[in-house]
Length: 360
Image 1: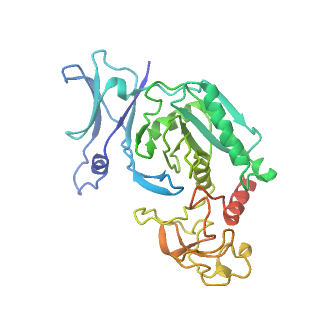
Image 2: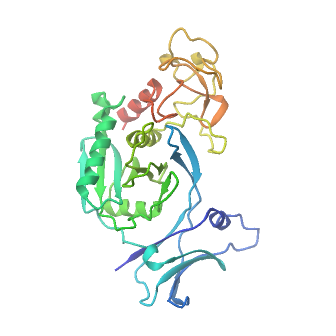
Image 3: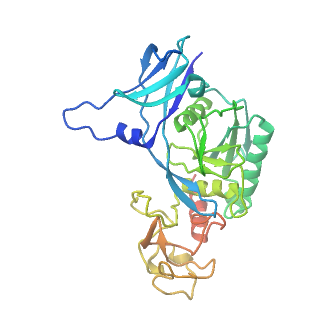
């Protein structure tokens, strides 16, 4: 029987593994080895792909978002494990970067899901939901159904042509006690082995625009996803933050929407052109969403950075502070789901989602 070995290792080791190597030098090789009860190596060494260290968007608990560094995971498949092995260790060159008991590091071989449920099979835009720390498929499908119902009540998905284009596919695997995807929690950061998640999705053959791992934990938390990287959302809400809204915020990113809050620690490079809900034009009449701007608010911008209160909710113009930057970048409204998870999508974001789904 095959196994996947999944080993988290720290930020400093991850950065070291990706440091630029001086010209003429060979970078240190990452290897994984098995150990017996005396700490001696048994069997051969494995050579895993070294993951890139990443930052992830994490719900803050006050309807906002923070960014945290995540511990990446070394993921490696092996067809056999030496019978004497009780632990597994990873090295970068001669430096030990991670070591765990074999029972804690060994994950199940990727397999098709035990069951699945599809909401709106005719939809063309697929959101994949995966179970983590769920032992009962009925409970998982109940939460998947709750998310489906929540999304379809929110604009623009509440409009039939838009909602009809969204397909949600929920995939259930019963989780062992420690989880299927090596998920761990550090404060509000809930995150696991993204390569292992992708391997399970690939084994199933499903293709989605976004993968969200639903985690059955009683604490609020999660981590944002990206291209080829799943998002993680716990199924627990707080008075100022519902878990479904956090998942919907992440879905917004899959339609090309940018975050609209400020965060000086987030160095995300800007795309060209900017996302449909961000502009560098302070004049509302020159913004990409000029046709949606509210008449009677001609200021340039509608609201400058740090102005309180900025403007009545729903007013569309140019509001300074967007895409993690306090000045020089503008969002369409004072508050929106792409800024706070206790607000709906603004008209500009709704329009961008509707256009993306119409083109799917």
